[in-house]
Image (cartoon, rainbow, N blue to C red; front, top):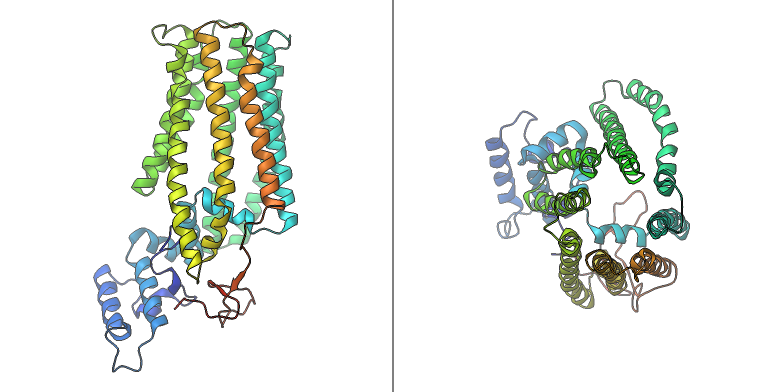
Length: 420
C-alpha cells in the first residue's frame, strides 16, 4: 500500500451506503457496526467456503460503506453532499506535492501549455519584484516604494471586477440551488471563499501600503505595525487548520510558525528593538525552512525508491509508474532550495559585516537564477522529458465502466494485471 491508497477505496460504489449495509439513515453507530459485522461474516474470504452468496467485491463495498458511515464527520458530509462531498474533502486532506505533480503530468499538451503560461506570469512577478527592490536599495532607482511593488498591485487590482460580479453570480446560484442541500452547501462555500479571499487581499494590501509608507520615510508607522494585518490572517488560518487531521495540522502549524518567526524577527530588527540579535539569526527561519525542505526531499526519495521497486514487480499503479518522474522533481526542488540558501547567506554577510562590495542585486541573483532554472526544468519536464520505460504498460480494462474511461492498474501488455 502506498501513500495514495485509502483503506476500502477499491470498494467504492454508486449505491446508497445505507442500503449497502441494510440500515436506515437514522441508524445508531452500534446498529451500523452490527450490520457491518453480520454482512462481513457472509462475504469474508475466510468465512464463505461453503457460502455461494459470498463475493470479494461485496466485501470491499461493505468495508467502504462502513469506513464512511462509522466516522461521524464523514457520515455528516455524506448525508449532506453524498459521496462527491466525502471524496472531495478527503482529496483535499491528502493533497500533497506528489499528487499535484501527477495531475499536471496527466494533462493534455494544450492544458500543459496553459499551465506553463500561468506559471510564466507568476515567474515574472517573482523575478521583477526582488530585482526592483534590490535596485532601489542599491540606489540605482529613484522610484517610490509604491512603484517598486507595482508588480503586486497590478494582479490585486485585476481581482476587483471579479468581486464586483460575485454578488450577482452568488444570488443566481442560490436561486438555482432551491432546496438541494448539496448545491446549497456549494453556494455557501463559495460565499465563504469570496469573503476569505477579500479579507486576505485587504490585509495584504494594507500591509503593503504601510510598509511602502514606512520605507518612503513615514515615521508614524513601525514595521511591526505594518505587519499586524498579515499576522491576523496567519492567526485565523492557524485556527482553521486545527480542525484537520492532527498530523496534517501539526505540519501546517510548523510552516506557519517559521513564516511568522521570520517576519517578526525582521520587523523587530528593522525597528531597532532587537539590536542584540544578528541578521543571521533574524533570517534563521529561512534556513530552517530550507533544511526541513531537504528533509522532506530525502523522505520523498525513499518513498520513490519503494514505488520504483513496486513498479518493477508488475501490476504497478498509476502513481508507481509516474514516480519515474521523481528524479527530475528532486532536481527541481534542490535547485530552488540552493538558490534560497545562497541568497540568505549573501544577505546575512551584506548586513552583518557591512560588506558594501556585495550589492543587493548580487544578493538576490542566486534566487533569481534558481527560479529561472526551475521554470526551464518544468517546461522540459512537462513537454520533453519522458522517463525510460514509462508507457510500456497499459491500464487493465475494468468492465462496467459506462463512460468508456480506463480505470484500474497497469499491467504488462499481453499479460494480466496483478490486481484482485
